[in-house]
Image (cartoon, rainbow, N blue to C red; front, side):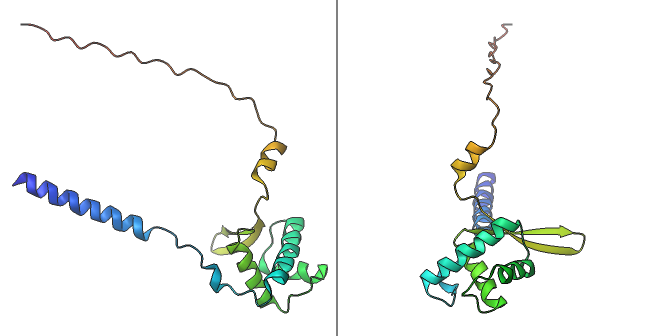
Length: 148
């Protein structure tokens, strides 16, 4: 009887962990639903120019991005809403990342650029030499049985 209840509890725990794992996964962004409202070639040109603005001026909020885009004179954007759609399209294409800075009760969302080439970034940073250390060896002690 105890064996049976342990088996059922094991199945229940396994089912619980499967459900937790299933519902804790992030859904993949559906890029087909993000419509940039322009031709794909024009969208990539606009996205590249927005990327350069964000890269040049650092992490920017949406209003600051709109101001910088207007100052730089990027053509193809019809409104701030269109720019927001383009930013979402760029996030889906892994060109930008949206960060949330929370200070007290206030949240501030900023867009940052992702690194273009991870190998290039590693070569630019100064790396310290890696020191290989030997792990201390652990000797197993023989267990001897005492005879009576």
